[in-house]
Amino acid sequence: MRFLSQTDSFSCGAIAIINLLKWCSIRVSKKHIPFYNNMLGAEPLFGTTKRSINRLLKHTLDNRIAKVKLINNVSFKQLKKAMKEGACAIVHWTFLTKGISEGHYVFIGTRTNNGTWIIANEERGELFFDDKYIQKQIRTSKRLSSRAATWGKTSPFCWLIIPKEKV
Image 1 (cartoon, rainbow, N blue to C red):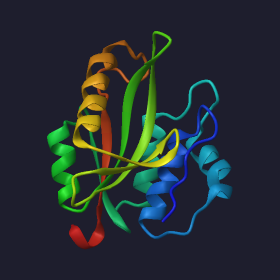
Image 2 (cartoon, helix red, strand yellow):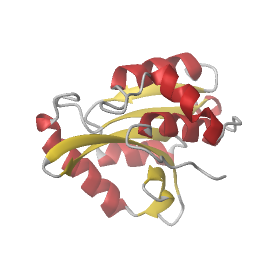
Image 3 (cartoon, rainbow, N blue to C red):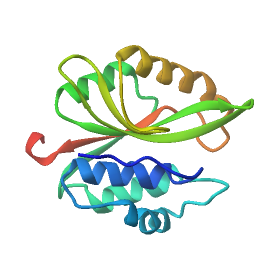
Image 4 (cartoon, one colour):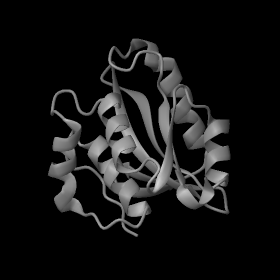
């Protein structure tokens, strides 16, 4: 399966949704990016809101393909446990760009047997990361989230997507 990566500064939410749908074996491609950007109300200056992703996930997936569970201030331990149980996730983390807190959505498809995580929508597309990278991203997000006006003190937050057969 080939996951997509974003090619602009505001489509990370749409790309995360598309990569999730790919993971769920739903046929989607690059040509669907404008459609999902429109569905999410993604804007070049502000990107995608937590509320719009939550609404789309609930409408698109909840109780059809999978169970969707939003977790604010997600911990590494929660994420790791969910992955072991067969879930995937759309995670929002916060980072600094030129001194400004910004947010980014990524899709985490699975945790492999050797302990690496497959993350789609980092700058170079699908990449493999170890536990330390995930822990660092979560710690950084928790530290910076109080400065991010849009996300308040809830970052990192994630939607756990639990496949129907696991529910």
